[in-house]
Length: 304
Image (cartoon, rainbow, N blue to C red; front, side, top):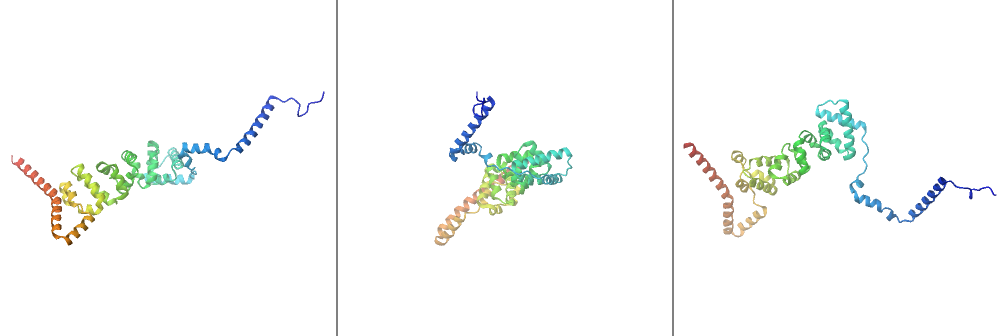
């Protein structure tokens, strides 16, 4: 009997299994190599479609420990606080995680927002970091007036913080009197001095209708319209619709039309201006008569 060779000697079960798996792996690799690259990329494309945000977010490098320490030192200085070691370690960890998740802008917010911003973010969630990173100049306000500004910003947007950064304390007043859309428009288009004037006028308005008309006329006439309002009379009696109508400047197109009419047809110009004056003065006259009637009524009551 011939001795067993490498070809006819008995093979153990484990060796046979290893050979089979190796052969299958080679066959699988050869089969995959024959598949077009477009087909091979299909599962990756489907994963990106299923979660596009995760596919687009690039990994953020970790912040150096020295940088985090400097940020925390500045935050503690803003807050006027000395942090115990345990609190310091926890705050550094929160800063590191926030920067990894939302970007380095959160460090700018923490520098101006103080330790309170870190504590508020731990309590109320990532919205605090997201909002303050977009408007870091308002981070301190968000940290110290969280109960007021955070719900308002969640509802309207970071325009609330943009207004607060330039006119602290006015965002809620504007939202209450003019509405959420008005806050967004004013944050984009109105200078700080106009925003302050509008907020003051809104508190003096006699009705929601007057407030709505005030905002509408401001968006059309801007600061020039505000300058024409009778400030002394508003302080004394409040803002009424007649004042808004009377102070609104006639549009440029109508002015040009009136100039042309005055030159070509004086008679028509006279009639047109009479009508304009009538409709502008009528509300003012009605307001004046109303004030007189109120004073007479009060005087009669005192005499009785």
